[in-house]
Length: 387
Image (cartoon, rainbow, N blue to C red):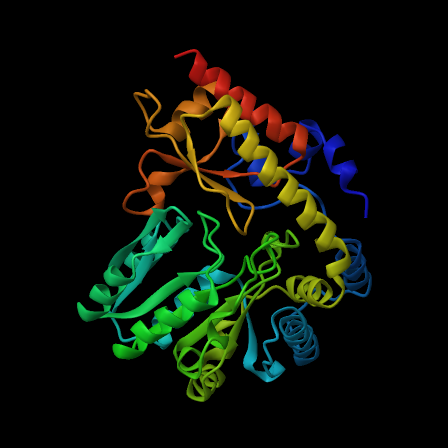
């Protein structure tokens, strides 16, 4: 596939698509919502058209759910060497729905959850809404990139946390955890008989030099601790179709699901299941060149920041299409996302919503046409230069 066509996508075309990313702030370049601007993979588009043509828009039946689980299992085996039976893969509407299911049915009521920060913005308010206190565990920026404060994680478990919410690849910082790191996390969790909710929905989006390792594969104890959420939504741009998967690697967890699954997964979209089946089964031919384009955008962003915004701190993400920008050195009199939205007309995510230490940061989504990425950074640099 020739990705050079992505460069020709215009702001007008993106706004005409009607999505939140380009309609919430119509005078801005949208770089906040975590979705891509590169359309649908042909295999997914075809599968959706065929489903609509045959009227497949009613309640989900067993056959499409089984086909999706089998396609997902084959993808996990092919890409990660993770041999999961299809029967252990179950549909949910999205990762937040998956987290809610786990909190309601697999954790004691009111149990504390350890969350590495900065984190995906909705995690903290959702856990509070569900009545689960949060122990925020800081990520540390070292010479080799981001590292989890493992002593703080140990202290969180010692203080009563019953589950770790592990996002890998890590939104918003783009860290991809190495096997040795995951093994140490599993050993810490084992010492405290803790569970791990592994959010791995960005797993297909990993760049050269790194490899995604599913948490549940690093040891037998990790498999017993884990409930894993995966999805094609980020890599194939399907977030609005409301479908994700829970992967169970512990027998009693799957037995529990059989008692609650009709209600927990009932809001999963029929067309979402169709799209996910096509993505897992036939989506690689589209994804690989897109991943190359994203890596090019990531590399370009690093160069632009060094040249035009050297005051902004930046660690190159190893996965995802999200960049975490440290703006604390800028002489701003307001939060940076507000400054850039007002003065540069670039809409970014407020780092302050990502937990302790996020103030003064923004999250930038670089999964956009390359000329728009250049324009976004140029606008931001010009706004800073005018201070």
